[in-house]
Image (cartoon, rainbow, N blue to C red; front, side):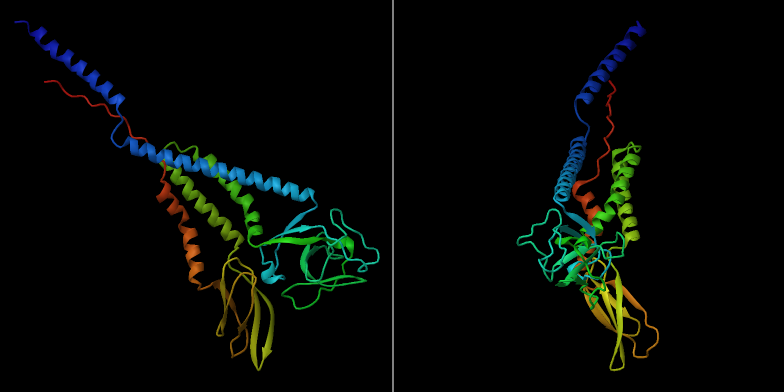
Length: 337
């Protein structure tokens, strides 16, 4: 009996079976691959759509800003609380050239881009200007009076008329739009854009798609948290003045943050304020030094918005999902009997 011939035949059949099973495994996707591929494809599509929309918005804003500037427009960000709720801290102010009315200033001049018919400055207008002797600093206050000697202005929360007298050369333009909060966003935009670029470059070194997605989410949350902690745009208050009424001290404050706040006096009362609002806080009856503390207000809607913003990354991951790691392809080989 030829033992050598009997043992070679099964080995050949096993090899043929292994090649067949390998080809079958290569042509058929592994278990769970369709779901993983669909999940990764959905996340990639969402990221692409968001990126395209962001580019379109940025390009549109850039074109609009260029057209606005060529038409004589200027824009400024409010950094003080003098205009109260009309233009809180962080408001983006857009101005256009304006003409001073006839007779207001003897040597009146019409700024470039302004019309002298029906477009003249009026009492109550919000005006951006450079006060005499203040250098290049730009203020935005309301027109209090217009006379033959010039224009006088006043802040909404100051309670007094400004000490300067404005001439035509001091006027930058009349406010045509006041956009609360937009100025704060524009101030943070360079930091956010630069940080996002760094995150994207660093994440490219992470090979696994799921780990790369997780890194981007966590790093973006950290970036927003750091920028927010540095700029502190949500909670703030300025002390305007203190008075005494019937033997009780009062502190008059204005909110300088974007979020509703509560200003509490140690041992005294409290007041709830929205962005730019002015309020009075009763101080401690015992007198002496009083500390004022500003914190997020108790508004349920405000807390709901804050919670939604904080949970946005988590909700995004749950809805879109992180890119799934591609499962390895296995080859099944059955041993011939």
